[in-house]
Image (cartoon, rainbow, N blue to C red; front, side, top):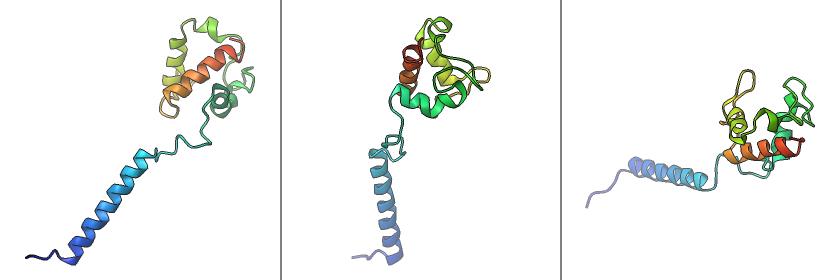
Length: 116
């Protein structure tokens, strides 16, 4: 019977452990995007990502005023979602940093919680 050299056996064991750890991290959402600090609601996402430019109440600042204007500017909510996702002019794209659900919730908040 042939014996596996010690170094080879150690390497195989280490590779297996790394693979297992990687699979466990992926199954548990190892990216950290679902931890307790991740903004989930529309107001939380707005406060964390939008208020810096658009103001805490949507009054504007670095970015344009949002309060009371979103439903008239974007009658179709999908158009507003596309702007938040892909960016437009000086508006940065948030599609790579926020989930589709976070974007939809923040857009809904901008349309209702900030007065449309």
